[in-house]
Length: 398
Ligand code: NIG
Ligand code: FE
Image 1: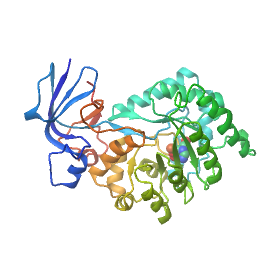
Image 2: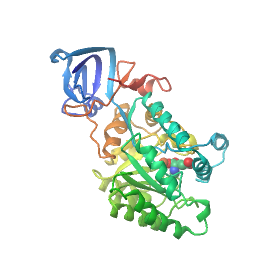
Image 3: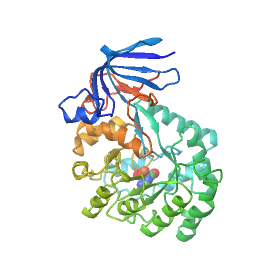
Image 4: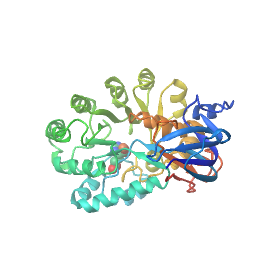
């Protein structure tokens, strides 16, 4: 049964060629069609997109009551596989304690101690929480196991919920290896990586990630990060990097040099980092995670300057127990608009089209694409930031 959707005041297609030609640059970027309709096939594929007045008929009809429809958010950076509670760490940060990555060990201990069923239920609940806020595609990292068995378990549980899984054995050096850093890098690049790709390069993980951060004694320096990323690439994984989160460092330039799909955080950038991102345009996306700056009392990255320089900017939640326990992309969009100089259209584009590209996906609303959509209880996408904190957007169940 095909389904005709009408009652759409404004449809964001992310396809400038499909927009109805509005003079507004934001509308052009988003490929906005007003008074739109969509036809979705029985197997959930978009068959037709355009003005309602020209819509073909379908087997079934649904009127959305005068709401905006957008591509579902693509949250391209999360750490959902964890147990335990670190809310006291958040409270301490709000009164001035800085973040240094040390709290990751607390989540590692709790995650190792959790049963499979407990961990699986926690991850599924977080994915459901995201869907209820408009996220239809999620990337999930391991990184709170940090033993071979615990990393594999985290990836297996994540894989039950998404194909976009990332091996983050190089999150931090676990306590038991604190005096043998090189041995831990050998474990990550040897037995752990071998096990991750044992059944084929993308059987358990699509990407490899590393917390490249010389400002944290727990994370990895530029040389260690290079070793880990090159090993991952040789094993057939795509590359992602946590870079320049806590201070200036080599992460952004390394990610660009190695052709990573994304370098995430980008909180502290020098001109050379921006130049590298501009040169890597089309290959490496800068994924900004403003919920982290909010939750760690850090300065926000200058998204406006990055976009004006020509960098591909994505937005994601970084939902994790330490630096941002928010699963809300609308919250990230509101912060991006209020604190980072992005327009509402740029922020929505960044959390759909650009974040999708960083996962190798196309998130246009066009024939042949999966109908991964979200609906807003409002006439336009502007309300996402305008009505910050109000639950007006959710994934569209067909
Ligand atoms: O993206 N920076 C490294 N990893 C996470 C935080 C992890 C944690 O504190 O539990 C991040 O901010
Ligand atoms: Fe992260």
